Amino acid sequence: MRRYGKHTDEDDIPSRPNRKGNRPRTNIRPKHEDAAEGMVLTVDRGRLTCLVDDRVVFAMKARELGRKAAVVGDRVAIVGDLTGKKDTLARIVRIEPRTSVLRRTADDDDPYERVVVANADQLAIVTALADPEPRPRLIDRCLVAAYAGGLDPLLVLTKSDLAPPDELLELYGALGVPYVVTSREELESGEAVDRVRKQLDGKITAFVGHSGVGKTTLVNALVSTERRRTTGVVNAVTGRGRHTTTSARAVPLPGDEGWLVDTPGVRSFGLHHVDPSQVIKAFPDLEPGTEGCPRACSHDEPDCALDAWVAEGHADPARLYSLRRLLSTRERREGD
Image (cartoon, rainbow, N blue to C red; front, side, top):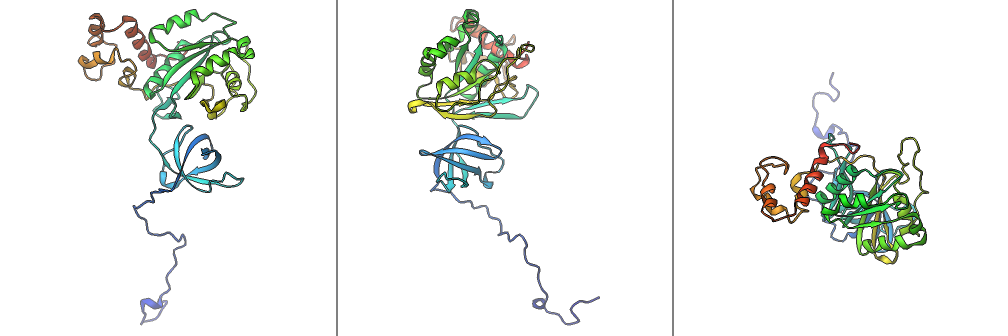
């Protein structure tokens, strides 16, 4: 059946309007040259808290960024309402290149890597000397992640009133990792806080540690004006702590002497994303010796050129042993 008769004209036929009202797509994107610079402090379900100059601004990621996600520590370009007033929301239109990245996977078989912190200068690995017992394999994995991501590691050993640190310090002596030993009494008196703070001045430091090691207690002592949730306790049956920090958060240190990034407690630290060539760069005394290594060398096989390099006296054998111990953590679970 004809709706318009025998003689119709296209102009007589009504056209259905574009319900979405979309404009034609274009590859030209705005440059946002007037965007303000900011730093991501927290990320919560798509909403990001950023610091712009001296104001806290709430923002969301612009659609044009696609799947690229911003994380705590990212330097970003922000447009829109930058007043930081209640019920205002700005847009993050650009994520600046990162100088360092701390990544982890759920386990070694998980190909999906998670970026924990960006642009941090160092990684403070907080470990209790007792209650719960130290987990060297987890420390090793954190060290590998730090070396691979371009962060300088720092060992922070807590609860020295319950156990001495000598054995653990001897294990990592060849790596030359700086360390700070603390006790509960020293934290209460402030003596340990001063020692730790000297290692943080002028830097962005990410804190990571197993649950129950006293990380949040230490963070609270370092940043008294920004106290986190009350600290948890260690389960007497499992020996594991309770998570008291649920999301990463960047907090300025008193006197604008640096930044502290508190991260949730970890029970595993997957290294699926780590390439041995990234780790070897953190060993300047060993890296030149890899020039004679076969392609895709794991640096722990019969044809590895590092054995001859060390035998010729170019590096300390203890350094090579430590490197191989770190690289082997990818094949071992933290509890092994």
